[in-house]
Length: 183
Image 1 (cartoon, rainbow, N blue to C red):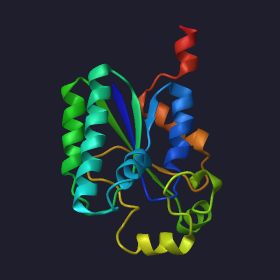
Image 2: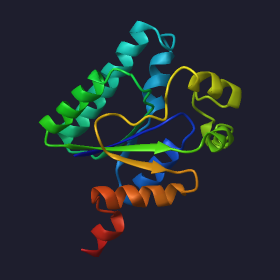
Image 3: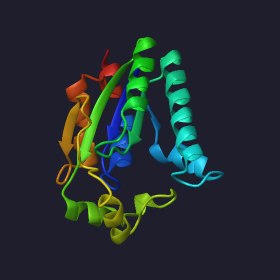
Image 4: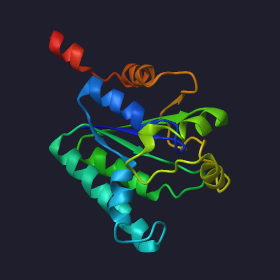
């Protein structure tokens, strides 16, 4: 099992890149808002119970995928200074079942982020969709920072989602559907 863990600030294009990567590789997508929006149906965002359940459901889902050998792309945000405990537990859990975690940091310039936050692709989820709302969130911490656990970084300011997906495939040596069919 391979887990491609794509992270970066809101509106950077994590889900869009994940969709291109999934189309190329056949990996499943576990989108950040699948767990956030699910738990938020009962518990207010940011409360202790909300946070505990989000971590629990993500861990259980991804550990089950590792046990079953299902390749997954997971999207999330990271803020410099966030506790890495859940991420480190996730890595151990995936590796315990013979899996590998491949970290990908996406970032772009701030002006492009403000343009993207208004995009139609953000509809249908409880995502930030206004530049002022995004500015308020970004003022709370460094969402552009790299996690101190390695991986690759892609400045996708002027890189298409498809090109970013191809960069991930090359960097991590992931087989695409086209290469698999050629065998």
